[in-house]
Each structure stands twice: as C-alpha cells, then as structure tokens.
Amino acid sequence: MRTMRLWTGVLLVCAAVLTGCGRKVKAMPPVTVNGASINVSAFQTAFSGSAADLQNKATSIRLSLSYGDFRTTQRELAKISGDPNLTESQKQAVTILSDQVAQASVHATN
Image (cartoon, rainbow, N blue to C red):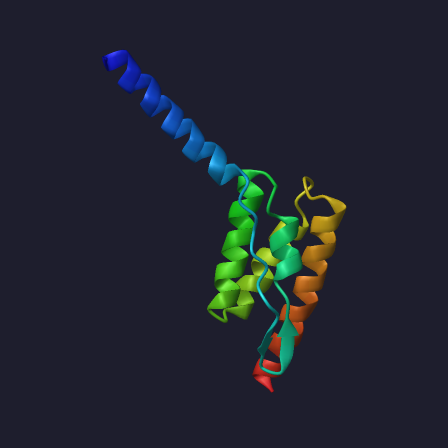
C-alpha cells in the first residue's frame, strides 16, 4: 500500500514537472515611454532558452526597465553585451533594446 502511494506521488511530481517544461514565454506588447517605443518581446524571446545566468541578467534588465530606471538598464545591457556566451540572435536583441532604451532616455531628459 505504501509503495503504491509512493509511486503515485512520484508520477504526480513528474507529471507536474514535465507540464511546466512546455511553457511558452508570453511576448510583451511594445510600450511607449517618453515618446519612444520599447519592444521587449524579441529580447525576452532571445533569452528564454538560455543558461540560467543569462536568464537572470535578462530578468534584471527587464525589471529595471519596468521601473523606468534607464541608467541601470543601460549599464546592465552594456554588461550583458560583452558576454562571450551570447548567440547572434541574443546580441541582436541586446543591440536593438539598447538603442530603444537610449532613445527613451534621451526623451526623458528633454
């Protein structure tokens, strides 16, 4: 009886874990900040399947951007752009987001 409960528990845990693995990242719509359009969806998609350290850095960038902290966002984007483990699509996403954040930052100071 205990063995059957144990196996049932193990199967439920495995099913729960495998269900979460197929989760897709929802793309965020473009946001207009200080008259500049910022589209985070390509950045988010580029880093969705990357290593944990890159995902953590990308999450940090998205959070600082969501708070409107353009200086921190630009500093973190500069750090991540120098990472040798970036793929070409990730480098491109970082460049595009950097340009958009720079435009929003310029509009914020004017």
